Amino acid sequence: MEAALQITVIGLLSGVEYALAAVGLTLIFATSRVFNLAHGAFFALGAYAAYQATVLGYPAFAAAAPAAAAAVVSAAAVERALVRPIRGSPLAATIALFALAVLAEEGFLLAWGESAHSVPLRLPPLLLGRIVVSVEQIAAAAVAAAVIAAAALGLRTRSGLALRASAADPDIAAVAGIDVTRQRAAAFSGGCAMATLAGTLLSPELIMTPAMGRLPLLFLLATVIAGGPGRIGGAVAASISFGVITSAAGFYLTPEWSSTLVLCILIALLVWRIDGVVAENVG
Amino acid sequence: MILWQVAAAFFPLAIAMAAQDRFTLAILAVAGAQALFVAGWDFLGGVSGQISLGHALPFGAGAYAAAFLSGWGLAPPGVALAGGALAGVLAGALQGKLGARLHRVVLALLTLATAEAGREAARMLRVPWPGGIIVGGNGGLPAAVLPLDEATAARLTAAVLAAALTSLLWVSRSRLGLAMRLAGADARLAGASGIDVAGLRTAAFAIGGGLAGLAGCLVASLTGRAALTLFSLEWSLFALAVGGAGGLGTIVGPALLGYAFAVVLQWLDVPGTVRLSLFAILAIIVTVGAAAGVRTQPSRPRRSGILNA
Image 1 (cartoon, each protein chain N blue to C red):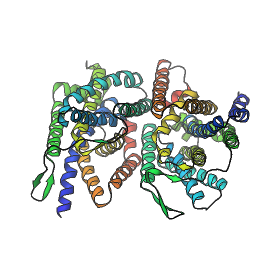
Image 2 (tube, rainbow over the protein chains, first blue to last red):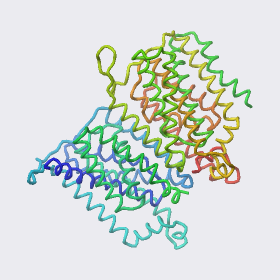
Image 3 (cartoon, chains in turn cyan, green):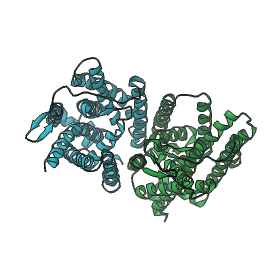
Image 4 (cartoon, rainbow over the protein chains, first blue to last red):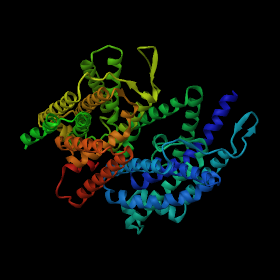
């Protein structure tokens, strides 16, 4: 019973942190109609930024804001150079972003080497009854939840309404005077920044390697598809659910099985759930 | 046109026959296998219009199957190669069956996911091996090395490549190939014409997977190991970059370009990081250029319209 509770709490917390990246991915799909296969690379960028901060003697989370800012700038460049010119070809954009992700991995390899790195926990763990949780994880989940809430609230503002209109019907939004291109660019940059922030927040729980972004990318794809592309609430719920499921799989089976489980779920979702939604949105 | 293409398909064999240096021949042998891998991808992506980001799945499956068959003495090396090719066919057919009715973007994601699943499965694999050892995991499986000298190995892979390219050229121009092209270009029209689009897509995956499986066997047999890295996404990126740059759907172009890249990069001993970066940049240029070109010339439908999913 205690083990189950421990697993649930840990899974819940990591699920909330991953939900931040999932919300970013779903926003990108909703506005640009593209699955951002470079999302894992931005996630890894955040994790490596946290590692670099610890190397320089700062707390890992101190890298959150600078990493997110760097992600905004680089994502804007990516959107301008890769996504916008080929907006009429979602498959081409997906492939280009996949290639960019591989290029980014090589960049991480050059910058930080192929050795695995980790971020040390600075604070002692907290004992809540019989449940052990790290203070960093609670703080990270709280920050992630706050950012997701801010994003959800932001979508109810005037700017958010313009973004939602651009996502729902770009043609009508353009006729109404909304700069759809700018909205898409903003969503892309914001979404990638969310992924980077999530990577920074999750860094104490991760082992950093150049290809570390691949499995989180597949996890996030599964989350977005399960929750419904373009649905923030769905992405959050699916992320939390998957967080608990994979935490349980990692405990009762082996950590390797949690990755395999996510992949099997993703394959099932791609085969049986997503096609109609994509055909409707992508054309 | 086709005669020139058939003649070009034998170009690697001519090079392998002419080369004398053992180092060069060793490089040519592996390059022939890699070109075979690319040819399978191009048949899938260029002829049948199904862009796969997971062509590494049948590649690795073929290598592992051949290693297992030869390592346990279940088959002589030659038969093990056939077994590996069959494993590639099955792996490709599985991808095709799962993705036969899917939108192209979803299909690309599905192939990516299945390749990663294959990689994870191979990473978890622990196999008892003759001698009382346990192999598998990150180390892969030991593969029986083909008892051939470098010259024979290079000429064998080049001959296999030439035969495969000639066969693919014939298939792509047969009724089956034309039906595949139509299904790739316009699935609705093909379906309305009575073509079994899902069946053709699965068949294309099986054919492409078989070639990838055979390539995987050859690489494993030449290097002595079915490595976990054969399941890596980087192989799919290599095929994608070279396939697009060499002329999507022409089969011989991408294969020869892949052959040339493999030879030059191995000859110059280019580090893996540089190679991957090169392929990634090439893939981006080819993809963006092709898709942007289709947008600027809407009145001239081109082969690269396949990317217009």
